[in-house]
Amino acid sequence: QVQLVESGGGLVQAGGSLRLSCAASGRTFSSYGMGWFRQVPGKEREFVAAISWNGGFYYADSVKGRFTASRDNAKNTVYLQMNSLKPEDTAIYYCAAGRSGPYYSTETYNSWGQGTQVTVSS
Image (cartoon, rainbow, N blue to C red; front, side):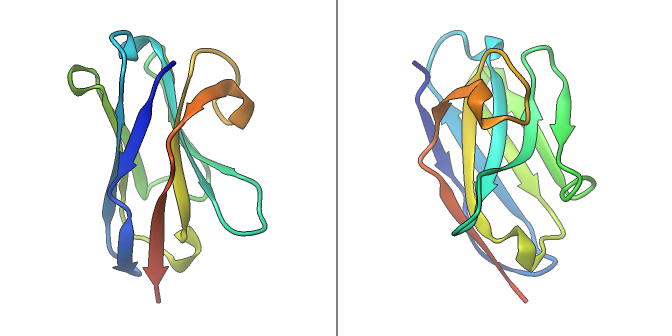
């Protein structure tokens, strides 16, 4: 099982930037698809971005043009660069790892990080 450790969350003003990191264990990191999700109280976990095991990049419409996912296989780490942050981006952000299934579905992923809080003030 892949173990994930997230970091990089915090408080930022609207228009600012943050970069989230997710360090993964395992020697076959490159064979996993990685996803970023976020969740606010009372809402279901929402897809944000994904990097497929085939190298494809996918983004939710709400973050396209502002967020960029990346992957460093040598470091077993994925990143989410968040620019032009908006108050509605405030949520707990989770990274996840999986091997098959739709990239936008939580059911695709069987390993999850603990979550990191991102708060965007207006």
